[in-house]
Amino acid sequence: MKLDDIKKLHQKKYRNSFGFYLVEGEHLVLELEKAADTNKVLMGAQLFVTDSYQHWSSRLPKTLLSEKQMARITDTKSPQGIIAIVPCSASHDVTQPLVMPISNKERTIYLHEIQDPGNLGTILRTLAWFGNFRCLISPESVDPYNPKVVRASMGAIFHVPIEVDVPLKELIHRYSRFACLDIQGKRVSNNKFSDYDCYIFGNEARGLPQAEIDQLKATTFSIQGAGNIESLNLATAVNICAYELNRDTMFN
Amino acid sequence: MKLDDIKKLHQKKYRNSFGFYLVEGEHLVLELEKAADTNKVLMGAQLFVTDSYQHWSSRLPKTLLSEKQMARITDTKSPQGIIAIVPCSASHDVTQPLVMPISNKERTIYLHEIQDPGNLGTILRTLAWFGNFRCLISPESVDPYNPKVVRASMGAIFHVPIEVDVPLKELIHRYSRFACLDIQGKRVSNNKFSDYDCYIFGNEARGLPQAEIDQLKATTFSIQGAGNIESLNLATAVNICAYELNRDTMFN
Image 1 (cartoon, helix red, strand yellow):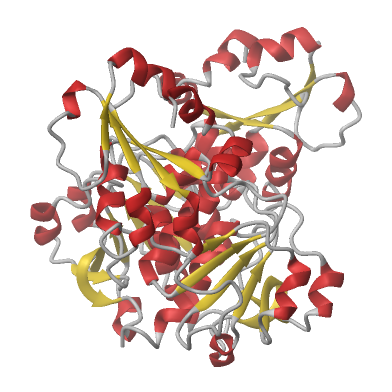
Image 2 (cartoon, rainbow over the protein chains, first blue to last red):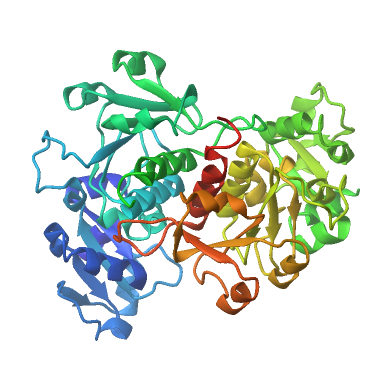
C-alpha cells in the first residue's frame, strides 16, 4: 500500500474501501502481535517503523520509513515511530459463516447508534476481558476502526468478533431470545438475565427505538439506581451487564 | 466575582484559591438547580447568562452578560450562553465533621493517582447512580473540578461527597477495614466483598503502591477475566465494584 493511501486510513470511507485500519504505537502493536498467535487473519497486518524501531523483532512484514515519511502517515504530534495497518476483516471472525449456529457459550452485544469512541473502546476492552462476546454495531454508529476507538480498546479490538452496519431489523433472522437495557425493567441480577442470546443497548442520548424493540419481543432489564441522577453512562451499563453475565458461570 | 477571575477558574490553582468551579451549559445547570434542593451549599452558586437565557427562571443569583463577555469567560468554541460558578465545598459534605462516624450505609471509594478526567467523571456518575458512596481522591490525581470531569459526570458531581488530596497513609486514621482491587485476589462476587468500609483503586497504568497497601492490611479482590488482555479500564473496575456492592442489598 502506498504511503498516501495509508494516511487516508484516518478516514472511514478509505478504511472501508481498502479494508485496513491503523494501529499506532508500541503498546498496541505488541498487543496485535500477541493476538496474531490465535487469530491468523491478523497476520495480514503490516508494520511501518522508523530507525528507532528497525530492530523490532516481528513475524509481520516490516517497512523502514524516514521520520519525515512517518510524520506524513500519522496524526499524532510526536509519533512513536511504529505503526501497523490491520485488516478490518480480522474482527469479523472469518472462521465462521456470517449466519452461524451460535456457540453455546457466546453471547452477542448489539449497540444501536453508539456515538462516543471512548465508550465503544471501553466496551470492547470489557468484552475481551470476559471473553466469549460478539459485538454487533448498528448503522449510524461510530466506526470501531476509528483510531480513538482502537486506542481506548487497548488492543481488545484484536480479540472481539465485531460486525458493523448490522440493522436492528435483521437481528430477528439470527437470534430468538432478546434482552434490552432500559430505565424500567427487571433487575439484571435476576437469574433469568443470562437466558438470552442477544443483548441490545441504545444510543447515549436517545436510548432505544421502542417500536423496533417491541417487534423483537425483547425483555427489558435495568440496573436499578438510587434516583439521584437520570442515567448511567452507556459503557458503564454494558460493562455491568457483561460482568453480570459472567458473574456466576465462567469463573466459579 | 470579577469576569477575569471567573475565566481563571479554568485553572486548578485559581479554583483552589477562589473555592469555586465552572459548570457550563443548560443541561448541567439544570442538574445543579435540582441538586440544590437537597444540598444547600449549592445555593452559593451564581449564574451568568446571555440574552437568550435572560428569562431562565432560577433561585440562584443571575447576572446578564453580553455575548462578548460570555466568550471571554468560557473555553467552548460556541458557548451555550449559560454558565455557573459553584462552591467546591458543596462536594465536601459540610454537614458532617471531616473525621466523622461513617454512617452504616455509606461506603468510601478511594482513588489513588487517577489521571483520566473521563474516568473520574464516569466513576462519579456511577457512584451518584447507586448512592451512598463517598469519593476520596489522592494527591497527584486529576482535579474533580476540572471542566472535563464535571462534563463527564453529567451532574453527578453535585451528588457525591468528594474529598481531594487525601493521602493514602491517612486512611488508617479513619477506616478500619480496607479492600483493594488488583489482578490477583478473591472474587468481588464473594459475599465478603461488602464487609469493608474503604475500597482502594490504583492508577490507570501503575496500579497500587504495594508497600502502603500492605500497611493498611487491605484484602485484595479482583474481577476475574478470560486472560485475553492485560487489564480492565479503571473506571470499569470501579463501576463493576460499585454495582456489586449494591447488587444484593439496597434494591432487593
